[in-house]
Amino acid sequence: IESIIQNIVPDGIRVEIPARKILSIPTEHGEDECIAVFLVVYCSEKAPLTRDMADEWRANTENEVSKYIPLRQNRKGRTVSRPFPYPALHPEIKYHTTGEK
Image (tube, rainbow, N blue to C red; front, side, top):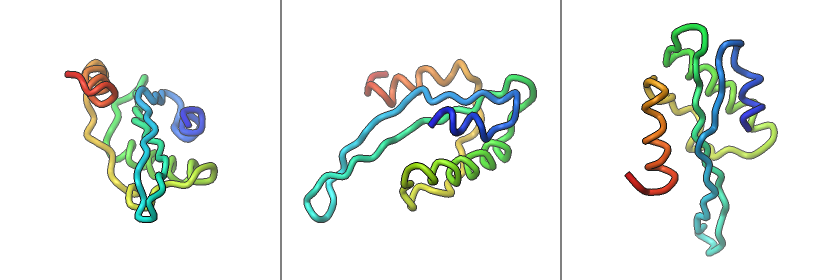
């Protein structure tokens, strides 16, 4: 996933996927469905990064990744979160991946 996305973004933007998780969701038919969840981080190395830029890359990412794996339709098209300083990412990752604060 990371290499697919890295090929979409322009030079000077680094892609990281620091958190990933496989969830098992029960369906209405009583069977479990496995869903992969990824936290995608766009890091600007040369110029300021805007939310509009990242949202365009998110749309392009959805189009490209959907060629390889199915994407949940109810999750597509959502805007990216607001930009934040990279050092602030690490506590957020720890909270979402381990349940600890």
